[in-house]
Image (spheres, rainbow over the protein chains, first blue to last red):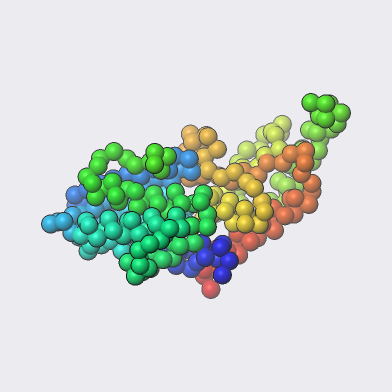
Length: 150
Length: 121
């Protein structure tokens, strides 16, 4: 598989065309916005947290295939997880897309589809936008996160 | 400056304008491609979008084909809002470009379409 085929594998393109959990979550307890001002991607993440568990999660926004697919896969993965578990997945994804995976691939499951991003440093920000919004939301931060302030 | 004066700025402009005309015509073969900005005296740049494929995805695939384009807001976010697009792709032509570079761009855009269509199969 070439780098390009790995980046744009079917799972990524499918999720970008028909993102899961796309829309506003009316009863969200935490909301956070993520922006990537250089490329124009923006995303709002909605979480419903009860007793430390992410009961429901949705997102809205516009972005490229990588950023939309990453957000879609993220919502699928973290639904039902505790805040601590979600943070662990965040760490593993960050390692994966920057090419420094130390966690076991089992932690990531389907998210391994994002592996191809590591060959494209320019696209790491696309893939990480929703995850930074998640991390910020898990820490109850209200300020929008920007990929330019890392 | 010596080099440019030796060539003559008129000659440079003519060369770039010819490339712009040719590239604009070539890109019209893609029905899902929209070109923004058609001023008569414009510089040799073409800003465009492809339907349903984000500018950054187009740019990454073109890059893999050896084609360098700019993608994003181009430091003109209000303009993107005006045209109601999230981002654009911009191909620029200069003195150092040839007609054959336009063919390479056209081939590159066909690769973009292929990568996207493949996922339907």
